[in-house]
Structure formats: structure tokens, C-alpha cells
Length: 385
Image (cartoon, rainbow, N blue to C red; front, side, top):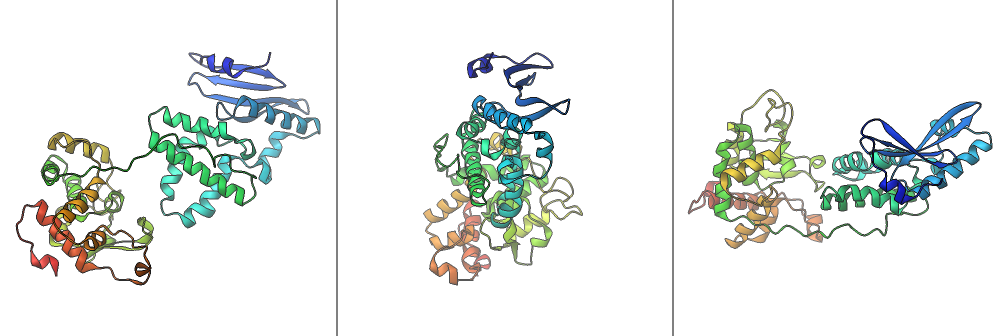
């Protein structure tokens, strides 16, 4: 008796082991106690039984599994062994999602995209375990939507948007190199609407968070203070190394920031003092709980502690940058000084020709930010010029 989607969906996983549902022509759906559902084709080749894994359900739909079964059985009737062919040299039409991604990662992402580690992490966690073995020609909209639905069911709506974008980009590349003819992800709508964060911490809230740093371990406290006063991005500061610290500035290389250019930030006296006070080991990383061998991590726990101790809620570390920019603007500081201090890339025509690091403006902005947070009435002119 042929399977139906309703029958599959109503079938509960066993308490232990696995159960098998059959659809005919050798097509089987195995369901494990962890509710992993995978399609396979059972066939006989030269007197021996073989199994060919087709993909997981619902990423590989019942319709797609039947279509693949028809193709595979035609190969068997012609005297071929699908499993042997699969293990041998592959043609573009038989390339699966995982193989495509590995090539895309090597030849495109690592060459052209600075944030490729984030892309790779999401694909390996939320895509490849479910459709990695599915051949590209059998990936359709239903397959992709099933992957995205797994993420939205966890309440990770923004991540779902990102993963859909990642899949679409990879499949666009696959079209370009001739693996497939069309991109099935191209017209799938985003699962959720995103809103830019608007949270701006007040000076009192910033000061409360700063005071709450006393409840953290020394290396964590130094990290938060440096992050807050420098106005830079979390990952850039968390992975700061001794090689990136100069006499009067820090230099974050182009392969470690999203601008694609080396970021230069003045090392003002209070920033240098934070680094000098930070516990150090023999490893290269400045902010570390492993004697410098590995960069600091556990940011969620750090934030949780700071929220509890400061009484300031609903903020992220990235809000430090927005708050710094807003408070400095409200204090009357020139917007160009703020932009340079945040190391925002200038994409204008002037920016293309202007190769200056604008250290004077950056110093002015960071000094004024420190003075405001520290409740100083007058700027220390030694910081400014």
C-alpha cells in the first residue's frame, strides 16, 4: 500500500530502535526513536541486497523520494549499481548538497566573503545534517522550506532568515557553475520580518553596566570595559592579540573585520591601562580565561551577570556602539568624528581616495566618550591632540 504524507506525519517514533514504512518498489522510510526520518531504496544487484540513502524527510518529500526511486531503479535495470556509481566519480547532475557546499566554501566563500565562518557554522548545524546527502537536482522549494521550518520551530526567526539567504546564495552559485539550471530558493519569502535594533543606553545605564563589571572575573571585566570605551565590535576585541597592539594604537587586520581594511583605533591612556591590568598568560590573546591560549567566550553568561548586577535590561554588546554614537552626537560632537571612531567604512568617492586613518578625530571622539561616561567635566587635552 502506497504511503501518504498524512500517514507519515501521524506515525510516531518508536520508544527505542526504529520502524520502517514501505512505499513499494523498494522505497522505505525509516523512523528512529529520536524521530529522524530517512528515505532509502532497497534493491538487488548481482544477487546481493544493497541500500541507497536518498535523503531525510520532510526535507526530501515523498514525491521527490518516489522520483529518485524511479531514476535509481532504471539504473539497476540497465545493469548498473547506484551505490557504486555514487561512490565513484560524480557528474554535476549527481552532486549532492554537502559536496556542493564544500566546493562553494573552498572556491567562493573563503575567497570573497570575510564572514565565511558564520556562514559555514550555520550550514553545518542547520542544513547539512538534514539535506546534505540530497542531490541538488532533487532540492525543491518544499525541501528548503522544511529546513527553514526546523529553525522557526525553535523560535530562531532571524537565524531562519539568514539560513534561507545562505542556501539561496549557494544555489545561485550552483546555477552559475552548471550543477543545476534554476535556483529553487530564489523566490521563497523570508519567514519573518526583521527590525533594526533601536536600543540606546542612557549614560546612567552605561555607568551602571560599567560598575557591574566588578562582579566579573578580571579578564571578563577588562574585556567589557575595553569594548565599551573603544566603541569597536565584539569579535574584533574578543580576539585581540598582543601582535595587534602598538605603542599608541591597536591594528585589527583586514581578515579579522568586516570592512576589508586594517582598522586602526587610538590606544588612549585609559584603554592602555585596561590592557595592562588584564591578567595575561603566554598565549597570544589579550582577553582570555585560558592564559591567552584561546580568546574569551561565554558572552551570554557575561551579559546575564551584568544585567542582574546593573539592573539594566534588554541590551546587547553591540548596543554599546549605537549608544556611544548617539550620546556623542547629542553632546554636539561632529558626525565625522563619530563615524571615524566607530571605524565605519566610507564608501563615497572621497572615501575611495582618502587613505587617512583620521587618528585626530578618533582620539577626540574616544576621549569625549570616556569623559562623559566617567562624569568628567572637561576633556583631557592630552587625549585629544
